[in-house]
Length: 613
Image 1 (cartoon, one colour):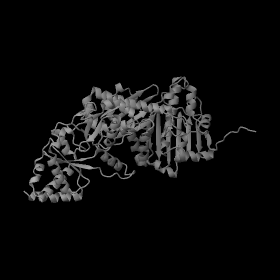
Image 2 (cartoon, rainbow, N blue to C red):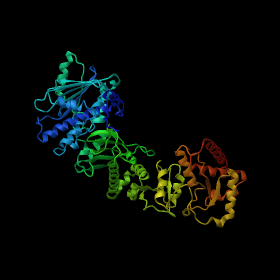
Image 3 (cartoon, helix red, strand yellow):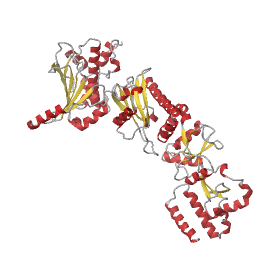
Image 4 (tube, rainbow, N blue to C red):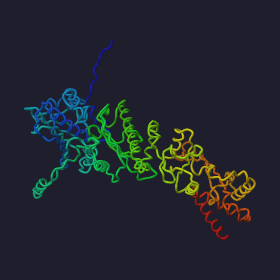
């Protein structure tokens, strides 16, 4: 016969779990206790608005007091306060959310939902992660309410009785434990407060109890009168303002304040959404200081001005992590610790909306301020290319504004580029491939510069998305546009030249050909197989985890239009071999850096060539 039973929770066993596993970092207790204080103030304000509480004209504030000698940290608010009955209801019942109960009761009468932070009824207990004992002193806003004192060491028992508080609100007095003593450091606390509470909605004041002698007490009091008290936080962050009301100076000042970055951002996107979800924020495009590596960004996530975490990939797509910014979304389905998100379809919608807004902004800047957009391109191109690779829909939306910088310094879209036999030539290093760039420029040929680390992946991605177009590195082949005539007309003399070089170099794996090139200055060009080189590069990027790819095959192209090459038949065999080898050295140097042994041989042969003069 089946029967029903009731699951019970033993608080004595639950406390160790809360203390060790509820929150990922100990310092989160500051955020939780201060956030509860914000909720208490919001509740009081809401009741005043509907006439259920008397508005005493009190300026909302939260005071945080550190007393290192007493080993206490106290958080005091002037919010709604609690009666003895409410203390036993909300504090003594673990996971009973007073905030949620308040919302359920007054949701039709107030706008509290837009500002209430807590929902799980566990935030208060985060204090026990760093405290051996916690006291509460509270006085309810209700007329004739008596002050209440509650105290517990984190076991299954507590003491409750008459308190001493004479103003409405609540004080949480945390007696810091030995393993939490780092939180008795003024410097440490300021750092944590800036991290978690810098943009909370009510003024926060931080006080440190100093030991005073009789001689200095009067001086300290005088100084306190002269120096106006300043809140620790910014209660009205810029993201709360309408974009039309924000100035460039305000955006730049907020960027410096939030990210302590003295390099001004290139431009920004101000998010301001009320439907189908509430989301505000500012995303900045930072200036990249490293032209080869993508510098990581930082996007801070908030809920009702309470800091949640940095770079939560469920909300902010991975490629947007290269930006810097803040996003405040009260509708985020946070988990019980307010540190991570619950799996929810709303999160995907928010993420897609953010991506769309970024794409719309980029398109808008391109269409209205193309010159400015071009000036930003070198900085924002790694971010855009990374975004395209990670999200094909993002590529389809913005592919018309992807720019390519040519070797002549022009910026062109994919459709504006000159394509030779559906090929786009590119440069992966302007330093190493300088000789090839010179040849292209002399012959009015176009190539684009793709020398950022991400371009190795972007080239392959672009070929995949734009089928029919091939991207070829500038040193991979000699196109028909560089040749003057069909070399087959001089096949016999070409074959002789090829044999000269094969005999001189003795490199069986090296392919040697002869072409009559338009440029006469260069005696020979070394090309490298595009496909094999890419496979080798990819293998190196992934640490040869799939096996080491062999070196890409090379082809030495002898330029029959060069005067030195034309006179090779006039030299004695030893001299000819020396010149052929020296020509190969020069071609190799235009392809890559020489090894130590190769450089030693080049210097030796250079001396021998000079001795011929």
